[in-house]
Length: 346
Image (cartoon, rainbow, N blue to C red; front, side, top):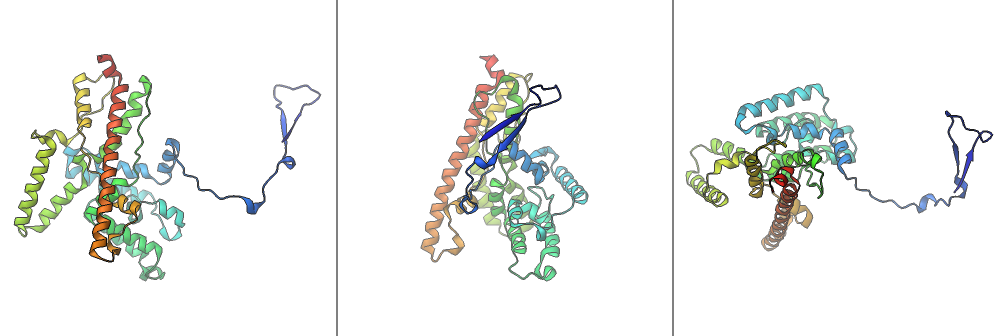
């Protein structure tokens, strides 16, 4: 390329700046039909923050149950529902009929049913949101036919979120940042860098398992029927709890000790890391494994093929679970190595 710099009589005033002209004729531009189309994967902390603001994901995650105080119980859930209702009134709902296919793909199932529907909403809230969506997107209302992509998306969202097992698996991978801080974080940045990472990973702590609330709801709805099966399940759950806790009091798992700051007592710091060293995740990779293995159990031609698919999916789930625990362990190791409180203790 040729660059030319113009100066007025070789004298530049403070307010003047060089004017650079660019001669594009000398560039060998490819023909339009020779341009190659490539797919760019957006990534990085800045982009994720931008996308969170763009899709209102920060409010979506802030309304989740794992941010609430466990001791608040039903009052906390009611407060979250009230906040969601207020936000719904102040912010216009998405019009899925006018959105492009690309934008629809960016919405999670909660946003498909209702823009400000928080994660881990109650089953009744899911039903109400689906009923409202049907009033707007049902083929009888739109005239777009039973195979309308928008209505099928709404139906898929409800089918997934209304099924406790499918919903648990969906929540496990729905808009979650798995990244962990790199090594060598400066001491003055330690608390601002690691604090939010531990907080968002609490989403998968055992006491935030959405199936806990579902078990309570189904148990109350079933009444006295199926008593023998219920006792059997309770016995299994009791044995599993004993195995996980090593025979110790399981109450300590009901909440995570606070991350603290530079003035936090060492005893509390050790309690915090003790919790994370023995962290129990409820994260379920079944749905993700089914997609990655490209196996649809419902489409199996025979029982043998279905059994084979199930084995392949289970093998993939086991691998993903192992990688997940390795990720959490690496997070804890790096945090302990960079924690200035533990450094001073040495």
